[in-house]
Length: 141
Image (cartoon, rainbow, N blue to C red; front, side, top):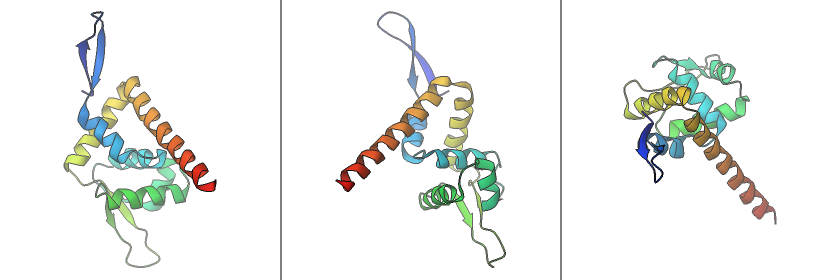
C-alpha cells in the first residue's frame, strides 16, 4: 500500500507515504498532461496506442500531450513506435513488467482509493506550477 499506519504522539493513526510512489510522483508526474498520459497508457496493459487516441483519451490539448510524451520517452518511461510514413500515426506504450511500469500501476491503484495520495499529487503539481510562474515573472523582470 501507499500508506502505512504509524502511531503519532497522541496515539492516533497517521500515515507514512511509500517512498517509491513518492519518488515516481516527484520524478515523472511533473504536469497534469503527463499524469493523464500515464493513466491512459496504464489502462492499455502494454498495447500500443496511437497519439491521436491519447489526445482523445486524456482530454488534453494536442501540444500538451505531445510535450508530455516527448519527455516520458526521453525519460525511458514510455516506448515509442515511430510512424514510417506521413499517413501513419506514431504509437506509444508502457513497457510491460518494467519496474517503472509496476510502480506506476501501484500508484494509480492506490490513488483510486486514497484521497491523501490524490492530494499529494495535486499539491505537487500546484507547487511545480507556482515555481514555473515565479521563474517566468523573474525572467520578465
